[in-house]
Length: 68
Figure (tube, rainbow, N blue to C red):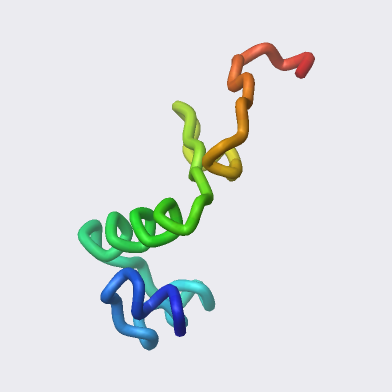
């Protein structure tokens, strides 16, 4: 409920997305990402898609070295 409020996206849309019942519109995805990142979490993506999450203040090495 808090994410829906912070992102200004309907709770119904978020719940349906979480259940895999529907895809979100791009503007809603952007709003959700901004709300999550405003809460101190950094979403990390690479060329293949989602790569993970980090605390905003984490000093991470995001190298592409497969041994890491």
